[in-house]
Length: 386
Image 1 (cartoon, rainbow, N blue to C red):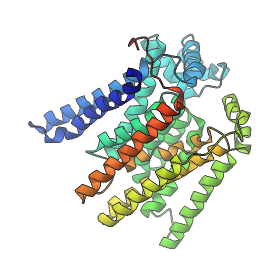
Image 2 (cartoon, rainbow, N blue to C red; image 1 turned 60 degrees about the vertical axis):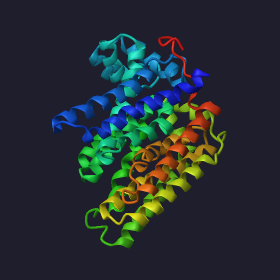
Image 3 (cartoon, rainbow, N blue to C red; image 1 turned 120 degrees about the horizontal axis):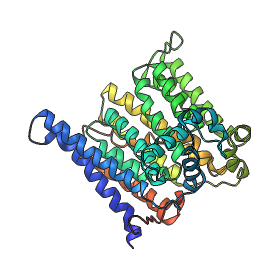
Image 4 (tube, helix red, strand yellow; image 1 turned 90 degrees about the horizontal axis):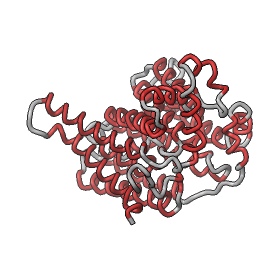
């Protein structure tokens, strides 16, 4: 029974930490005092979640056994310069960023649990910083959405979630129109998982959605919409194409992709992504009706656009069980979408927040507890005695 209640208990404690952090602006005392409390409680929330991920048994999740332990043991015997020279020589083709992170962890604490802790802490920190930028004062909702939809999965597909977190962070450069910094961030993300390169579409999409002028080409609303439709079609065609020929091509250079090649045509579809898209459309329509602020709606358009693409992309699992990972970079926008709703109508706002939290709870319960997905249930930890 405790193993069933363990995840909800972890989520509840973490949400309380992040909620207190958001409410610190209402505490008594000076600005510096409130700022310090905000940082302390947000740090508690991040460290708590990362610690729970770090002390889990190494038997939880295929990627821990396939990548983490193997990488940790091999890089611990290498010098820093050897990482750059020989990391392709590690038995499995481990991305450079992941190998470097493992090497740094071996020099701090020679324990694979510390590596697991560091991975999750880096993921959570990058996502929290993004939430603090785009959902100020409501980061607790962002982190609640992350815990319900992605936390369990991030404890298994760790390399890619490191890339996803960096890519989400990079959108600040899209909003600020700093293309050089954006490209650098994506390239860094690709050193944790090569699929991060697909996030390069963020920049033109965000410019088009927000009405940014891409040089002297996009001058009218019709042309801007045409460009956006073309990019959207490209994203879905790329996703479909990646289900067969592209995966086989990439597998020649990345042996770990052979897992996907072996399972082409063996996936299935689910009603959950469709339900998710319907709920996103609902919140989008209601938010548009009740808030006329131009900047607010432009930002919401971005979150809705990517979140819908991400959830619809999940249906590509009918081609191969893990092809939906291509769309994980878009699906992560769900955590920014949920808090950015209806500032003007309190009753409707609270109702929709509850609806999304209920949706997240149902999604988590079905996929993790009932379906056993993500290979992280039940939670076991020899260190915690569970």
